[in-house]
Length: 153
Image 1: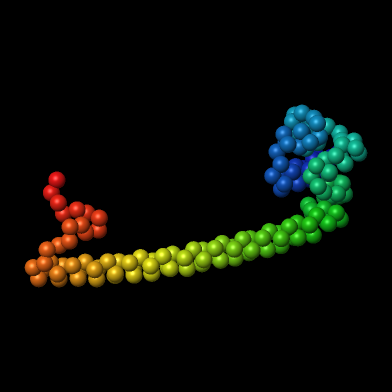
Image 2 (image 1 turned 180 degrees about the vertical axis):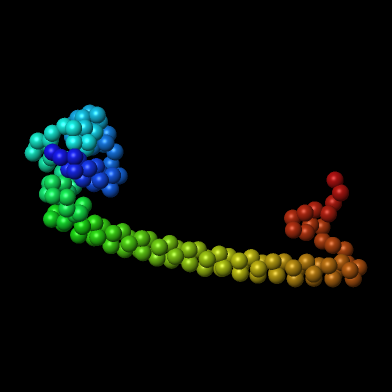
């Protein structure tokens, strides 16, 4: 194997964000032995070249001929990838719609609760004003207001 082939392997490996250690583990060799392959020091058998191509997910021809094809288009991985992305986008869209729907329901519920509280406050304010009017006219306050006794203990 030439130094150029080793350089091509290295470029594809780096494009994939694989380390030499990762590749060495895939090939069940040491990192040092793998480094020698990339540097063109160690000759590579056909079987080893096929293993490298498989680990990098490229055709052997891409490594040998220096083709710029980095993706293996022959195995429909690209179609699967785009299908995955479309499904992910659809799942995200559904999740966002569900979240918006739930939040809208919560807002409506809280608006209803707020209206009830405002009505209760208004009713209690009217009662308090009515009592203050009675007390101001000389009437004695009732013995207990809102559950509070007026007796001194």
